[in-house]
Image 1: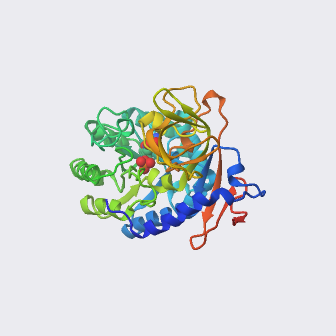
Image 2 (image 1 turned 90 degrees about the horizontal axis):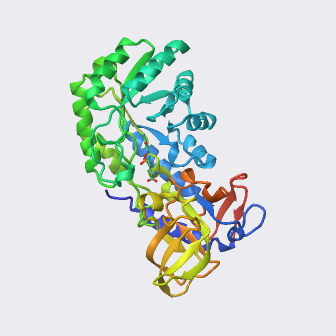
Image 3 (image 1 turned 135 degrees about the vertical axis):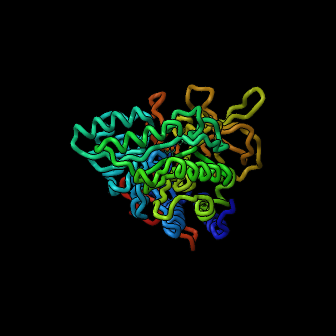
Length: 426
Ligand code: LLP
């Protein structure tokens, strides 16, 4: 997919800001790099630019976005999303609670998940939140709960379309072998069940085939599947007026500087070109990663540079507890040494956890790296902080926010408790 050219120039300014953060001060006058590491650092300007690009591309086509809260639930990040008028996609009662507390309109909140508890379902029903129902069994439980509560539950049926998203196996959700969604062979029964129960108000279909999808083909196949299902099962006749296509748009982990903002225009174009559902059907999406991944950086300090038998190992004070993706999915995250101007060498970069899988990168080139150097692990705005662990009794890393001034060599940042309070100039 083609990316936005104009964002390239802006990146370099952004990059300079990060490398020059040495001189930047927190609200209480201390240097950012003198703060306890590791910490997450969020570029609010890039976040806003990304949200704006997504919102504009969606509005233009009449599409509705529900931000997938699981990607990042840091309150400051969520507050920004709310400002752009998006809805929320939740997968737990606590996410639902957070979404409502942060001011998302309950009507714009959707709730998915294969294992919703009775309490969670009731919470959604009481608040008028749309349930993306994942099985016939869940549908039956929901009908019973809503009848007893004397309220109607708004229902979308999540269908498993058996479309390969061509991404990592562990972030594939729409294949027959996956636990998510209702198999199309049970769609008729599910539709009839909704029609026969007054406590259920069927509004449409939901799909989500997987995450970090970088080519149009899986989305095109999804559209073809949806077109067929909508027609064959006469979804209109059952009152279907909403189609939710989930999230999944990937980001460039290898070149975050060249592609800071995903190409939402091309992404939505795929759907406007290939969907053949009736005009009156409202089209919804649930992006997570694409909205927030590139605005976040994990800042970590080098504790040791260890000479192993065959390799040099950089041991950092952040590890799989702050960024699980490399250990869980062998995911690549670009790493920069923000302070070294020494000649390059080859290193493995590893965290401190008592796990051999606690490895950020193997055989990467970095400028000569020493104890005390500060490293930036890029593209950590999605599925980093929200997947952090307290394994080994680790403390939760805190967050800082900054707003680079695009026309000057200075920036602003502040801590989570007092955002935007100070402008910092070196
Ligand atoms: N909707 C549903 C129903 C989902 O399950 C997900 C993600 C999304 C939307 C948002 O998808 P996105 O736009 O972010 O791709 N921890 C993994 C990603 C797991 C995604 C789970 N579901 C990772 O770090 O790559």
